Amino acid sequence: MAAFRYRREIRPALVESLGEHVDREYEKIERSIGDLQNLTGWGAYLHTGSSQSLSTNTKVTLTNNAGTILHPQKPDDIDSFYESNLITAREGDGLAIAVELTFTPDNSTASNLYMAVDIGGSVGEIYPKDFPITKGASVAHKISYNITVYALDTWEANGGAVKIEADGPGVVTGVRYVIHRIHKAR
Image (cartoon, rainbow, N blue to C red):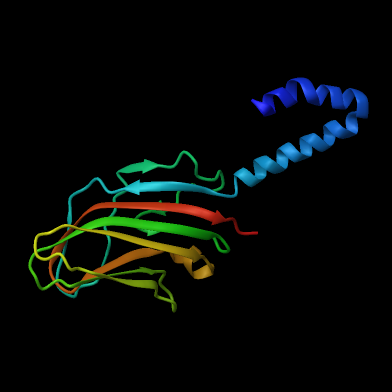
């Protein structure tokens, strides 16, 4: 409402009294605000396929078919934050990544769930995290793997695959990735 009042009432009065210079400066400010709004954004990618079974001590790529995609606020220069089981990023970008899932152990041997992002090359896995599995067999454990990252050339070239491993068998369901760009590369 204030912006509308400014454009309709205040801006014409300023231009009339102070001249076209004020109008040109106002246009620059509006463009700058628009540019700032495109620096950040987010996308959510929900797995709609079947559950993923984990075998004991076997590291695999977490399955997310991105059957439901929500990204009405993604920046214009990003096609997608997630493609073909890989989190995409541009060199220099900063991202906040949340991977949410439910892990249900088949039996009482599962006591730990490990997650990391594999960007390949000589770097390999980064941002490792362990989650204790303490509720027992056949009890769902909600997992939220949250990381804040910066991407360099290896991530841009290879993408980042979320890896998962449990020390006992179980099933993964309810996979969702929410990815925010919090800094745009310069």
